[in-house]
Image (cartoon, rainbow, N blue to C red; front, side):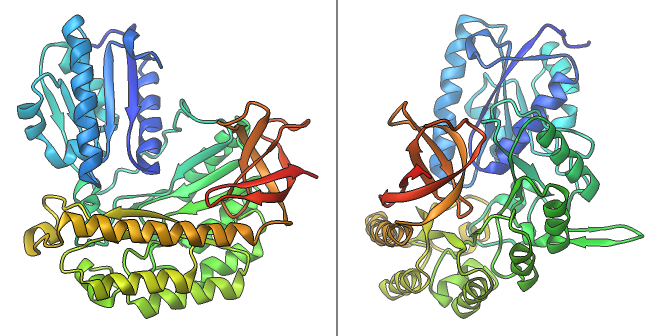
Length: 444
């Protein structure tokens, strides 16, 4: 039974940049099969929610949305509801037990099969496909940029992860590391360039492990980065996420060579304590991490550095927490993504460690980390007062219709009066004032 071509589908996405890229792949697969995408959930025949399983808070939000979708289904029993992505892979059949109104569950490697799954779903069957594939990179699919600002595009270069950090579910929900064909990546970049985009971000769970090999060649991440930079010299290039154990000197050498590669590196540290890093199975020490920072500063003194930090991991003491605060002070991160530890079922930490830091202590330590980083971010931004940056205009400021916002090469948000600039322009902006989160300036 073929699914009706007049059906409309709606996608709602949660989580990381990888999920955004996956939703764009899904949109292409479905529209290529003549289904119609809608941004109005009330008009949808099929509702998909692309999920994140990294933190418990994210999963609880998704359960709430599923209940809302079910309220729509009660009004219109013909609506079909599907859950795709990491949470679908992690929970599998448990989702059908907890939320029996779900019609479809598809893991991150099942998106090519969605049209066939929809046909079975329309015939009244519950459909589940969460098999992880060793080779699936969605080669040949040009993602549909359906919910983009039209300025910045995410380009997936790898799928999966082999790092097996003790707290992380990604290797179990996204499978083993796979690298995309370089020419396929360039083809996707050409497509977004021809659509008017001005910036691309190469994304993967660990971009430094990118390595495409065939009988004729091996292309590693520094080589790919250089290939992209020379291919689109008039576009900005970013990348995320790097992994300290694998981050190489070659990467910063390539960055220094090409001015269109943005002066910004996201390098998650997670903890400043060697004991905690070992328990986390991160594969590097505090000293190794600081050496990576010194290397970045050597080649790219104007490079902004951000990080991820987890507060209250298993067995973390006040001394371990203090080590993290001291590392933050030493590095002086420009900004950071900060979270308290959330145990994820199925991980090494969940199986082997006790989640033994009390919730109140986790919150206290997280607040101290946030307070310190707010101060460090303000200090970093204050150093930019009087400087002029090339800013890519991304949109209208949320606080004032008379102002634009954009980002500089260092990934800092700058707000400034519109003047004659247009969204998508590169404009020189001089910083006149700052907050801990934002630069404020004027076009010069």
